[in-house]
Amino acid sequence: MKIKLKSIFPHASISTIAVNNMKETDYHSYDLILTTIPLEEEYKDVPVIFIKEWLDENEIARIEEIIMMRAKENQITTTIRDIWDLFHEDLFYVDGIRDYKKMLVHMGDDAIKKGYANDHFTELVLERENRFATIYKNGVAGPHPMVFEAKKDSISVAVFEKPFFWENREVRVIFLINLRKGNLYLHKEISNILLLLIEKEHLLDTIAKCKTFKQFIEELKAAVL
Image (cartoon, rainbow, N blue to C red; front, side, top):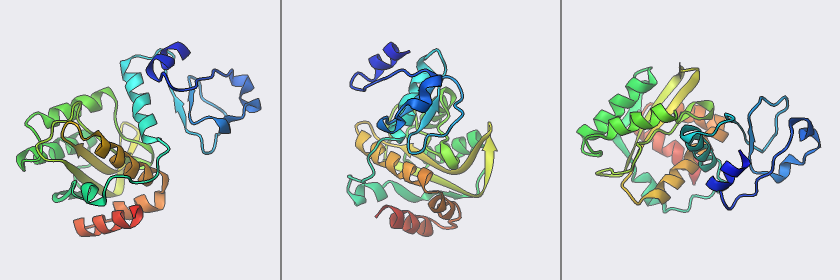
């Protein structure tokens, strides 16, 4: 497993630790803990990811996704104009369909209909979700297609004041990401915003209760700026 991880993350320092040695380990010196068995203790400030013993393509994609979300970069480096231009009032939904996949289809098809996305956008989003569901901690979801090829950069947003569950995962806010090829820096900054919502539950509560697009943007700007 270490050899496999080293091939994926060649610049990372990777250590293997037996579970009975965890108590004697200075885990604060690590950025991430991957484990194949449940751990009895919580490791504050260090994210713990439960993984399979066999790292197939889906598992590798899941690890990469979570690492990207947990990147230690808290500053929004993209110009504010670039970020806020991604949000559009006609792609904002309040208390929509309480079924995750059906809501993604509705949001994706709407983005296509309104000229933001290519015709197979919804299909690519569902393909990505079938490989690894992008519903993160505290009900924040950041679905996106397998490849970026938007007609117009956009983020569709759905908020649910009362959360619902899909495959035992809570859903409160959905950010459906639709970018053009080559805009990976924007995806990185969007990930920072999602991470902010994941880590600050009081902010997530406020966002989930927004009734209008104007209120949503104002609350999100106040949190980021």
